[in-house]
Amino acid sequence: LGCWLLVGGTTKWAFLLGELDRARILPRQVVYIGNDFNDVDTLSSTGWGFVPMDSQLARDPLARVLNARGGQGCVREVCEMIIRAKSQ
Image (cartoon, rainbow, N blue to C red; front, side, top):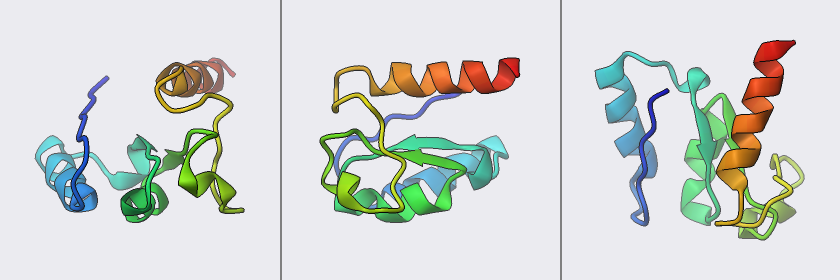
């Protein structure tokens, strides 16, 4: 399991593309959690993009909204989804 954490900034998609290229991972193989408007490109370009329930983006009808609030279990919720999906 490889994880990158980038907090703040406006070049998240460019950062992620560089890291994916180095790791030889395709964007569709990525799970991404974002909560702000500068996450939209990355959320829509990765395999599984999620937003916390209290995110500004949670109002978007296309958003995959988590049950958890930001900083209160979002990563755990996504990990549990992955575990359930892999066990089926």
